[in-house]
Image (tube, rainbow, N blue to C red):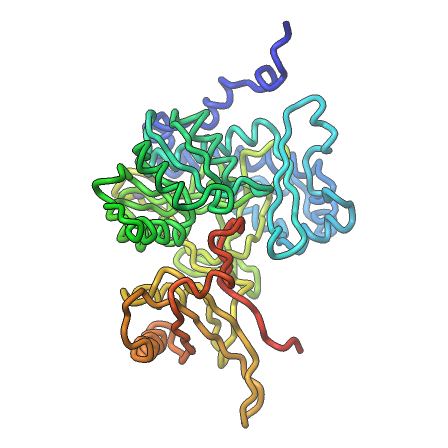
Length: 466
Ligand SMILES: [Zn+2]
C-alpha cells in the first residue's frame, strides 16, 4: 500500500535543519552574532531572488526597472529592487485572473504536490489568493511554533483556538503549529458565530485551557463576559499566558496574566514576536529581511525612524515576497543583543497603517495611535472606532478625525471623560481630535468584533473625494 504523497514529498530532516523549531532554535540561531545571521540572510536572499525571477510578476516588474537577479549580491543591494504593494497584487490578478501572475505554482500542481490556498483582504476589497507549498506551510508552522514557545506555551498544554476558520490563513496555521509542532491539545471553537462565546468560556474553564488564542480586543471582551457570567478568572480558569496580535497590555490587565504581542501577516505567517523582556518584537531573521522605508519617497530609513515595513521573505519555495511594502508602520528599535539573549533585530509594536493616515492641518495622524491614547484611560472600554470626514467651515473644507470609544459600565460623567480624552490626544498627538464617548458594546456594528472578520475594523474614510 502506498503512503499518501503528503508524507513523502518533503525532506523533513532538511526542513528542521534549515528552520529549527523551539527549543533548538532558541538554543542556537536565536543568539548568533549578527554577522553570522547576515551571512545566512545573504545566501538565502540570493536564492529567493533567483526563484522570484522565474515568476512572471517579478520578471515583468524587475525588467521594467532594469534590475537583474545577478545585480543583487549583498543585503544592501536589495533596495535596488522596486518594492511592490497590494495595488500591484490587484493589478496582477486583473492581468491574469483569478490567481494572478504572482503565484510560484499553478493551482493545477496540486495533483502532484500538496498545495493550500487562502485569501486575504476579503473584507476590504477583492480577496487575494496565496498558494502555499507544503514546505512553505511547514516552515510557517515552525515560525508560529517558535512564537508560542517564546510566549510560554509548552507540550501538553490545552489551548482554545478562537480565530475564524474561514478563507483566511490564521486559524489554520495556529492549529497546524500547535498540533504538529508543539504538542498541544487544541480546542477548536472558531469564532462566536460558530461556538457561542459563553460556550467557549465553559470549554476553557472545564478543560483547564492554558491559553485562549484570539485578537487582543476579543480577549478583553471574553474576560469581561466571564466576570459578568459569574466566573472567577483565577479560580475557574487555568490561563497561564495569552499570546496575541494587537495590544497585549489591556489583555494582561483583564486576565491578570502575561500577554505578548506578535506581528505577522497572511502570506508569510509569523514575522516577529515579543520576548519576556518586552523590549520590542524580535524578527525571525533566518526567515525574513526587514527594511523600513519613507512613506512618501520609498527611501530606506535609518534605524529608529518610522516608515512603511518592507518585507523580504527568505524561506518560501512557492510564492515569493521580495520587497513587499505591506504599508504597516514600523520602526527598528535595536540590533543589539536583547536582555533575553536574542540577537535578532527588534521592531516597535504595530504602529498603524500608512494607508489609513489622515492629514489634519498638515500633520500626519494615524487612527491607531489615537486609539492607543484613549484606551490608556481606565474609564474607556476595550473598543474604539474612528472615522475621517470633510467638515465645511467658514475657512473652507477641512478634514477632521473623530475617535469613538466605549465607556466602561458604571462610568458616570461621560462628558467629563470626553473632555479629558480630547486633552490627552492634544498632548500626545499634538492636535485637537474629536472624541465621542458611547455606551458599552455600541461599537460592535462598526468594528465587526465577534463576527468572522479576522481583525476588527477601526477606521472608516467618510471624506469627500476630490
Ligand atoms: Zn528579547
